[in-house]
Length: 403
Ligand SMILES: Cc1ncc(COP(=O)(O)O)c(C=O)c1O
Image (cartoon, rainbow, N blue to C red):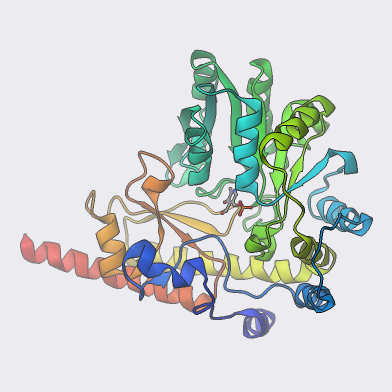
């Protein structure tokens, strides 16, 4: 506890006035600059001090011309993957990009044709929908099954849709934003087998891989059945969620199969001839080398924030449902039993004074759900929870007086 307090004192920061999307675009995005910002998946914590030191040193050099990735970067990244997740990577499998969403767009473009069907499991991070629709591909969704806040894959539905819709590509979110699942090896094996059986290429977005907040360990699609599915797989990852460096624009595309890699490389020459981000790689190398303890502290803060939010809301607001949080720092609240249908936005902004991600951004049927970011100063989580409790008390009083 004392450790956590010292960490918060050292690393927590007020981001307003820094062109932060989360804090400084509230008026533009929500029409109210005074909301408490609980949206956007980044953190109110400074990066590990060794990362700041490495960046400062590099910046002091004063030249940021074209650069290549040094061997020390591969060593740091591979060593991180091995010690945190027991994943063995090879240098020739790895490509760099300027963001995971960018890679998803590129992969959809390269590996499918216009009108081809692409499958996602909903509710899911909204750029998954956009990467398919913006590229004029056919979006096929399979709803995750919500069992009282614990989400499961409907494997029979997935297979049926793959066959009837002639799906070419499946985009997996693992761990799953926004429902907080870390898929087990068994679940991953089932879905990877279905895809293999029907010749569906799998892209596994593992950007949240390091954010293990429950008791489950993250399993990469690369490791399932001792690597048996690597030939049908592209994995995308980045240091951006783990180390709060999203705008340094450095991400990874891992492709074990040489034929898929060749197609990926050919696709990239057509529409994405970008360079590496030199500052992004300096930051990531330092983070992968020195960032374990910093990350462990962040994970503890997210766990504590989640435990607090869950305890307070379930005791003070019976009827609210909170999804189990195994992975990611995002909590998914089901307000459908406590807020009248269609009034969630009004309730959240006008009564609770919060900026959140709304359920319908993630899935057509998810109005009534909201996503809150817990990678933040506990005092902000306490405030958000107090606002929700007060908002619901007011809502119930308003309804009682109307009745
Ligand atoms: C599942 C998932 N993929 C990708 C991203 C964004 O990645 P990037 O900023 O590298 O494009 C996020 C951000 O929240 C995410 O949750």
